[in-house]
Length: 210
Length: 210
Image (cartoon, rainbow over all chains, first blue to last red; front, side):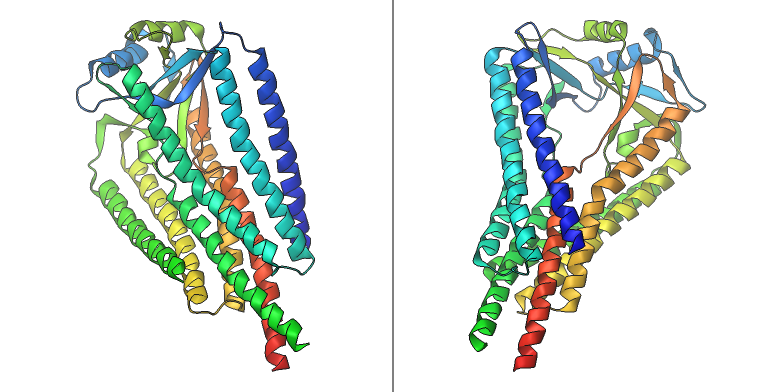
């Protein structure tokens, strides 16, 4: 049970860290002005395959024309893998981003909170209570939903940017592929919820026998 | 039980895909001819791990690269913030890629195999036994350690590049694919393994009563 105490303490520290991060994000969002730029790293512009003039120009510039001093014992070349962009930090954009981050991080804090409740009940030898089964299924569902929501948000952002901005010989990409490992592990959590249901009925039977 | 069947089928499909992916990757890197004049991005040599890139710090280089880019609709400003490094295709790099492909696929396969065995036993109604508890603890440990392992391998690779090559006005960075949610998931699985242990004891007591 000592291990569970460590996990609970670790979760409390993480919870406080996430909370501090929310406060810091709100502070920085309030400090930004319209003259400041917000850098976006996703979606980004990726060079189309095949002979790409812009890609060749940028790579040639980096390796030959620019004053970049690139040294090493073996042959190597510098490459521009992608082009990112910045947008002025208008009040609408920064509060939208701050709000989105708050919702996302609040969800993470909720997971920590529910998880800590599960740990406390396991520590008190009350693993098979109805609330725990619901808690595990809730966490399983949230974790299952996160990769799906991320993919949907990515696709929506791609659709918006493709409609408004375009560069010749370049395609907008999000880079993030569907997180299958996370998806399958969330299914495992959900499955374990079923097993705990069985444990509960077993415990009820035992209590009736006594 | 239908949900369990779907979960079990998904895990089986994922296992086959991992094996096919591993065979294709090893085959690709084995039969790839050595080309001293052909440069491949380092992130393409190790697609299973996080990205390694140089971040441009010097203002002069940033401005010069920006001058090469085509104009875009206001208010978006495009820029080059990150630069990749491409190395020639040599036997050493191919060998590293093969080892990494086998290690990564083996890790995921083991994780899926253990998960599949647990789901199968739950599906058959065999919930609380020593094997389930043991395997759940192993899955929890493998999941919790995964982001740290990824970070360790990435940092080692990054350090080698940092020691070997030097680029003025740029600093080397790495970005992992796995993050805090995976660690949380691993800890949750470990906590559930403890609950399963309680279930096993409960079942043993019940069997003794009968």
